[in-house]
Length: 234
Image (cartoon, rainbow, N blue to C red; front, side, top):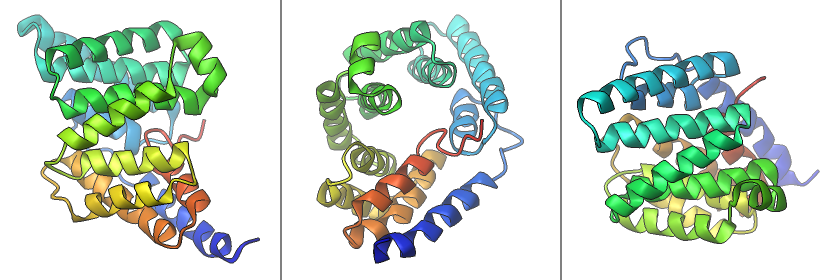
């Protein structure tokens, strides 16, 4: 076993364990809070699906009162996409992409809209493999990477975009250490105005030791644990 792997594997387990025991906020009421809890603080699929269902219900209620609300639309799309990931529903996956693309067309300089499009393509490829993701869903690495680049360029207000991009880059290509490290370093220096910024800054800092050691494989393995539902046990 390479020395770097021997050193960093315990760190992967420790980082994943630390996040796994984080409590789900008792007062998670907004769709964003519910989805953050489902994706990053829940290890049980059934529990995650309950939280996702609640997020969809709340989003639908908001949209009934305020049609076209940007935040509710975004979180509804994310929730449906998360449900697709956990249940492997092609119809949900396609519905979520349609929501994201419409949102990006409406808000062309919205970093989050670009990030969810990037995540849709790159997560599908990671979960299904390139051929199956392209054949079954139309997912394309080139589109995902382009959206990820746009998200980072637009999202310079906090740690969310560079932190998430760092993990997605190294997960997609464990040889792309230089780019992933650049993004992770930026996230580590970035402000944290929202809970998601806090999560992504912490996660970027967690993968930095492996990236600084030029150990892309270990960084990629840890990134998989730290990305949404990476600690799911069933």
